[in-house]
Length: 525
Image (cartoon, rainbow, N blue to C red; front, side, top):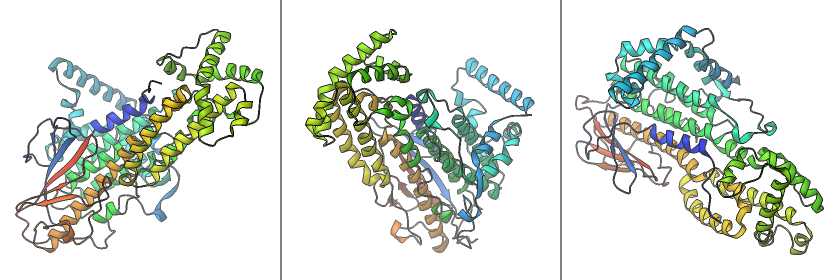
């Protein structure tokens, strides 16, 4: 059987957008010259290396240590539904004038792109997303943000809630394959506006406001991890990446408090994908509800003819995907049933052998079943086994799970060769678990890097503004890299040090760290 690509266009659109969110400057250099922006290196055949130069100021541990928090303490969180407040922040309600002006700004930007032949991220307000706080045209940005000032209260309210529930009731949906979630994309837009608000606060020296917005961003990321769709969790990872980059700008400021414990106190992981993975593992019986009838109760061939007649209309958009692999069902119901019966007959030997080999049923019982019953039993058993074999690795740290996931991918390919078309429905809707776990691990790596940098700032506060020789010399432990389970790479090079995260298939972070030479003594707070 030709292996089909995973049918999950919305997911891959989010994965691509999540990766692109971190890409800024095309310049590349061994030693970056710009302060607080990413310098990219794109070696042939290797991951993109993003390097940021950070001139830091020593900062001691705050007193009390948990003086600064990004999320409310559990005892201070409020019951209620954060989703309601996010939806309020998205809607304009009585803000028609603001909505009209925003549309005019977008139109003006697109016209400028056309006339000046620029990329969209080279013109305001889009270009502000990759602008350092100190370089923002503050008055212009603040005027722009006034158009959405009504969002401030709902976002503050949402950040205080334990849960976000979009009330999807997926079990009752008939066209789950075509289920639209525009509100999730709108939350990405909320995060971008929050980025501008945070950077304005940083530029104006309002550390308290900047921290407040960072906390709201991490709350949004956490809430997105409570939805039913893996896409939502990946948008949450993207939102967390926005907050992380803003935090990197904040800690460059002379008055920035040490945030080691603020980041250590975040949930691990911030975006918990377990609920989404468990939900999407059930998509086949949710989306094709007639499959819920399939069990080991013997049924005659006539029953399965009617079953196929009820099944075909429930395939929905999956039918279009099947057509890409040569499976075309005629419009005439009788002809469609005959075509489907032919597919079942072709898949029967592999389906039967799968049930036998996996110890699902004994051979004699299997041979008593009609061909269609064997096919659908194998289809559902394979789907359940395949999903659980993938999802179980999400319960381990990524660095422990990754080798097994590689082995699992090889096992899947072998099984597909054996059972043929029986595996196709699962292939069409399966979540690419490796990519999902990589995204979550990347967010955790960002947080671990931030903690390490803050531990270095803390070290500078007790040793006269000097960089530590080794990470083992830090006053507080540096977290391990989620991609390796080992310490980050750290090189002390005299006037500066280089801190690097492990590369994963597409991206590596690296920081060139210095202490401001004017900081000759430890700062205290």
